[in-house]
Image (cartoon, rainbow, N blue to C red; front, top):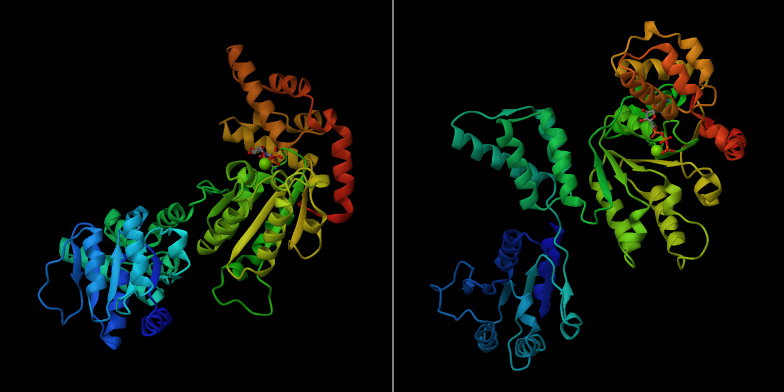
Length: 492
Ligand SMILES: Nc1ncnc2c1ncn2[C@@H]1O[C@H](COP(=O)(O)OP(=O)(O)OP(=O)(O)O)[C@@H](O)[C@H]1O
Ligand SMILES: [Mg+2]
């Protein structure tokens, strides 16, 4: 393991102060046990509850050492033999001037042996005086082999406890292990244990639960939302081109070792008239690929985290990569990319970061972005090669409107044979799918207000009294359609 080599080198070089940010204390101890196996320095651990304890094998029976910070640091300074001290829980104590001074004396080797102090904690923030003396060491996360070992360990524990064999689907178990990559050992162990104890089995049924648990661990910025309800293309009328496009790429997208001649699909931009199903299509794309759908709240990237916008975007995108394969859905991308310079260039940098990430990322994260307003979109987003394709989701054609009527009537347990679909299609010229659905809903209210079931006349009346957006905002809709004609691929 290269992290062990790194630690060994640092210890051999007698680095005075190391900082390791992790919650996985056991892993830190194991790493240092390996290190001292070569270097043969005494290894100590300090905790608030037990004070100093010696961890190496040739330790004398535990010597008595006080647990408070001052006497601990005094003891460390007085120790003649060069040693390694793992200090857990120590960070809060550094706010005291005496403690800080004692630490600095040891670290700067003022009448002290060349010890190595290691501060360990979930988050270790140091006063400036110490930070400049510290070396931060990232603790690598467990690899596939180690994760498989964790799973075997948990399975064995369950079998011992329950006195029967755990039912394991090998293919699913492999997928589960692969999906634990990116998590710390304790997190991975907790998740695997939950999957096993849920039902005494490890199989494909565990995959959704796994993705959800993993997502919750990774979404620290709160920018991402796990969309439980993906859709199927059967739920969307009239997007045949998008459906075929996804179907053609599905195998390559999911193949763990795809043909290098084929570029893996990166993402699509869905432009279109409001209410014509862009959000629905995004969900259907995730359903079509059969992977989880992660929505990024791009609009709130700015209001929530003044000054931390870019860092949060970076973290959120990194989390998505750990969740791969998945679909990253950026709904209404224009809201997060206000053009113009009124935000000090932040949104320019955000866009730049997003585009670079899209071009360079290796993980299977398929981006689906949607937008209503093209003139608000920066030109670089629309340039060829950013997205694999830009689809235009237009107002539904007559036959698509018929399908939308049928779909939404059926969904409400109404018999389509009792309606004259042709007449409904004619009466809904210029309607979006959302407006058709809305008319059915309001007609149902009218009908129940009149004490009866919904009939053709009531539905026609609801359609005739609705002014669709394409009429109310004719210029904008026409301009959008004209713009799209030469630049986009029709979704249908
Ligand atoms: N082509 C369609 N087939 C079936 N239902 C549709 C279709 N288009 C719209 N609908 C219905 O209208 C609802 C709203 O559509 P959706 O939110 O996907 O539109 P949108 O293009 O994302 O709109 P907006 O621009 O307002 O975000 C859908 O949940 C669905 O019930
Ligand atoms: Mg939408």
